[in-house]
Length: 429
Image (spheres, rainbow, N blue to C red):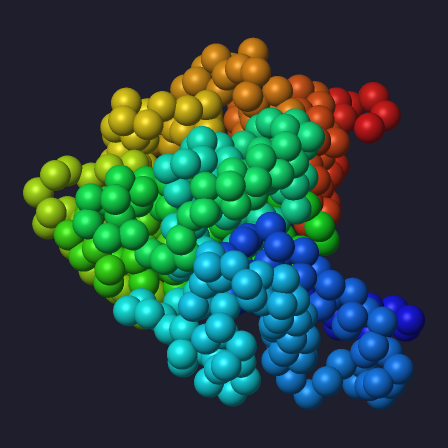
């Protein structure tokens, strides 16, 4: 097949796979089988589109084509299941109704009070029958379309470990006959923490892609934000839901300013703040207010949103209240300690009290196992060393960060930072 058609199929799949899997999971009540049949639809597209649509490389509505193909395969599976079980009393009414209402009214017939397959899929993957790491990995795989490698990098664990978690999670859900529904009452509240973690990690992967040539994957950010807004409407009295929505709204407001014309990254302090989306900022600040009004104090997402709000309120980078940001990171480190939080706190300390203070905090993380292959640690240390005039050390740190970085845009940026560290007079660079 042509490279053009292949790229077209991959692009559509990246955007639409979660919706297709969610729709199939609702029909089949088996997330593993749903993913398998969605993949079969992808293979059919790879085989069919180049010959069927030689000029444009894809049908006029490629998402609908994939969805229809996947659903037809699912319906064929249900018909075969019905034939095999038609004498068994266990045959469910759901299968019969699916077959009767299979074509254009299928979506309407199966809709429930929330009307969102993707949200149902999140709650299934976050079911208490699964261990926490299995819930998060499975949902990132099914909903976010992340590869096992991307998920592994998000959790700082080996890729085979993530693959095993996903396989076990699918098998456990099938064996437990988990219903395809959004929980209610206390069950919903108890499962929110895992759901929020999943949405947050999906958003982060979209905001700063771990791999590939592009620094951002906006479709993932949009999907995470959409799910967050739906959750906020579903559980309006839960402050951390509003905190997460506030964080994503404010972070998303910077999207247009984060990329240069050539697609290269523009760092926060160098961004044109006139390009920040003021509507998203206002929405984020309003969500942050709702989180604070709950009277329970800000949780981890609310604190991160408060940090983002400090940047959003600053008209110029020089106006940023870095001492308040450092204090918020102190609170976050107490509430939800992690090496990444400590690294971000080091940056805030450097901006508030000077690069030496930041370097001292970052140096304390050098032997942290979770950060051993995390490219941002040497990248941050390189920045502090550069500002302190220790250019040889800074160059070495930037080069190490570039070696560890999996994203092409980030790697290029780090190599440029290394090149900006001139060698001492009389020495070759």
